[in-house]
Length: 125
Image (cartoon, rainbow, N blue to C red):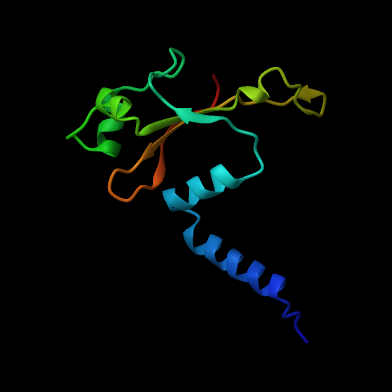
């Protein structure tokens, strides 16, 4: 006899949804913003010098009708800086310290749908 409690049914539905949508940008952003990682997200008015993103990189993602500067001025770009991880000691496995990433993530709020979607990542800042 199966366990059909509301929590079990909801968990199964969530698992099915995740299985079907894990490759979609909107679902990634949902998980990213609601996940366990402590993050800091804010409007991006200018990119940090250690985050070399250019119009050439973003044009295929944003479209050729806009530019990085235009999106910065529209306040449609958000930057997530995981600086809280900076200076933390990593695990040691087989006597070797593991890489501790301090990533930067650039997100774009889609103008028509209002969705916040990932544009680009940098693993280490």
